[in-house]
Image (cartoon, rainbow, N blue to C red; front, side):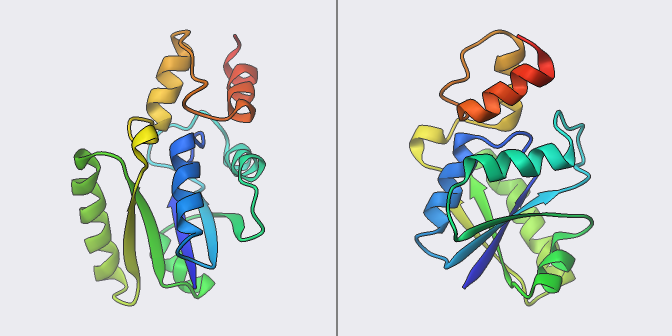
Length: 157
């Protein structure tokens, strides 16, 4: 069975990687679907975000793709009826629940499943990673060196 793990991944973090690795214990294939036009300003371009995910995920059972528009339409085009979302903290649940109900209303054949991020990564978010980096903090516990180097190239340091 395949699952789609959608997101902005701006940039990909150890939390994202944790969800992908744990999803591989449940699903035969994970499609990491990077949204082209996020609702927030992205640090990395669409192509850069796809390339960074490809660079840090090493499994033949993971594919990385990009999409525009609604995730339910992308899932329908791919013939995949399960979406995977990661939950870090209780505060994530309200937003994720609202999104799942909206997606279900748009296409009742698509289910949303959740994985709790491992406790070692539950505090990590792309937003915090960027904030700590910009303010000179050590982000080696937040993301792989490939991502950190890309941030250095993009933002200087």
